[in-house]
Structure formats: C-alpha cells, structure tokens
Image (cartoon, rainbow, N blue to C red; front, side):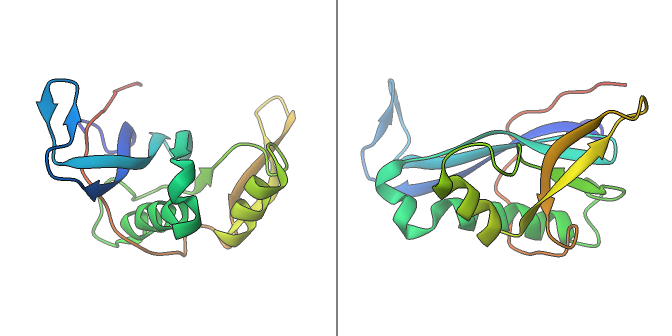
Length: 145
C-alpha cells in the first residue's frame, strides 16, 4: 500500500486446481475464502469476510485469520506499527456458529467509545494483537487522510 496507516488488503486461501478458470483467465487455483483487512490509523477491521461452506470444516477461516494475525505481529512490519485495534463486527452479531468462531479465534466483546462518548458494541482479539500466522499478497489499497 502507498500509506502504512491507511490501506485495504485482500487476503485469500486457495486450493490448487489444474485448468481452473476465473472467467477466461486460467488460474489453476480456486479461491476458498477471503478477508479484506482495512486499516485507518490505529484501527483495523475485517470489512469483508467469507469462506466456502464445503471447506469450513477444514478450518480455512481460522487459518486465514491467524495468517493475518501473524503478519500484523511481525515486529518489522511497517504496515502494522501503531495498530492498536482489530475489530470484526459485533461479538453476538450473526448465528451461534459465527459467535463460536469469534471465541475460538481470540475475539472478545468490547465497547468502542467515540469522541462524543457514544458506546458502540464491537469485537476485538482477546489480549490485543498477540496472535500469529502469515500473509498473502496485497491486491487492493486506498489512501485517506
């Protein structure tokens, strides 16, 4: 990304599949899950997140989440320096399976308080950003000040 504190990065999990096409382009791999990590200053969120239902039982979403966490925890990662919060929706938003996934991946319910002191229910990883795993490739970025 152009700016280390304002960006969007798409992360994905792929499975090799010789001859697989994305439209007219032969990719030889199929996308199974993706997460869009969006950062604005010291705050980041998963703005898009989805996994193929046939592969969820194999832990693809946890693997992808922990890959992002590992990348964010790299001490020499200039794109993670100064990041204080990673949020993913409201803790109890969604079905019981999604709430269980949030618990298993280290998220916990918190309230975000805005400058006008309005409390907003949110979900952040338990213990801050102390988790681990590895990055894919930047495919999207934005710049905002």
